[in-house]
Length: 113
Image (cartoon, rainbow, N blue to C red; front, side, top):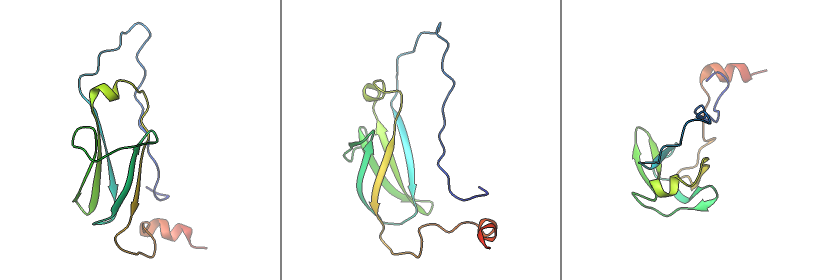
């Protein structure tokens, strides 16, 4: 990352019109990393709908690798009904920091006048 944090979106190539869609066999999971040890998770949303904590149809969180990991679990019957998933996570940090993210030294040098 040369210019700091960025949002990444991955999209697969669409199947050709001749190909039949295969039925969804498994659910889908999304994982977010929050840069705090014990933040309060205020809300996790899927396409604007608030999710509850659940290992199979909702969200779960744990601390690992220096981040709080938030995983959104979507079962096959729910995942099959949508082609696009927008995940949002509202949280309250457990510590006050000067800023939430410090850019790498190379980026900070570029930002100096």
